[in-house]
Length: 496
Ligand code: FES
Image (cartoon, rainbow, N blue to C red; front, side):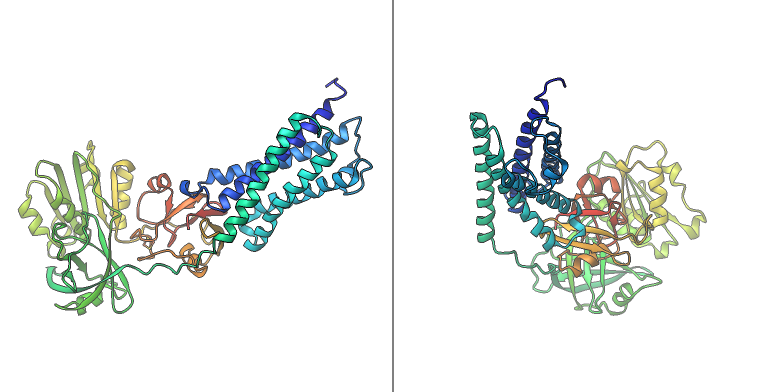
């Protein structure tokens, strides 16, 4: 601190570092904007690095100005470092540096405010970063005292070269890349199918076989898969497949007449006949059977449908047991068939016979088996409290009763691929807001059950309110379901 030249060294070093960081930030921004880094899918750290370089440039510029005031030789006043043309020393070159500083503040501020400002305004401010780098280059070349030194020349040529490359890449890619056309939400890939058989599976469960109208082969599916049936009354309903996956000619579903049907199961029970045409999409699977040495299956009511397909697929030597719970045998689809085929594995718990609910805690005590459950939320919630998440696989047929802890809190979303900013108000879902902004997201149940609307989260913390999978898995995979889920953070960045 006793060296009288100390602040002069700081001035020169901070000026060079600010120039380099600013050039680096612009280069990085160009790579992000032009999708040169698309192959690694623009993860959040790329944008963080871009911002970090911009922040470093701003701090170093501040230090550069401060050290100019502290240096006893240059001895700039506050006015001279903040007001263009106020300096006595090379007023025009110094003024260029001051203007570049204000531009840098505007660009960095727009980065921080990004999702809260109109996209066009944000973009216009960001173009200011090119002007800022050019101004800094002239400022350094005309006002710097190191201009003649070879080290300075090397750095200057490298930075000017990089800036030129960045501007050229930006200009060429904008000229060649026409703006991507707005994509309409992808239509659900529906297949026209026909009902080829209907049969009662219990007093209130109807079995329905569906085949393609043209008789061609159906896509393969695995146990746990479901299809979405598009009814003529405009409703869509998801049903687990419960037939034989090797049968490529038909899909088999089981439809329980819901006591408070909103028009889905009631329509099928009233109208499903041999030859009835129905559009079907899928299959998709969010309830896949993972390999395990031992399984415990717990089914409640119509929740037996995916479980039955799983049991059918198990090799003979696999250890498993099924706890099948229902109101009465008369209402429990497949109960007789299951008990006749595997009397040692299947326990039928009909409430009208036992009078009490089975003690799941006792059944699962000491077991390390993988547990698969499909049933009402009271059952799945009980199991969630008994079985570690790593061993528990759940499919609900009602959405879980997860309430947002900040109901109705608005948030902002940046769609990374389209560059669109979307505001989600308190009284709309994220999916609705995306649809209003013409951002395509395929959806089906819109209740957080089927998993059709899955999107990837690039930044921010989603508030998972769906019933598709457990939150740890979703966070691990970086996904969310926007039909019901919201945001813990004020902003989210999605891969859309
Ligand atoms: S549409 Fe079914 S989970 Fe979102």
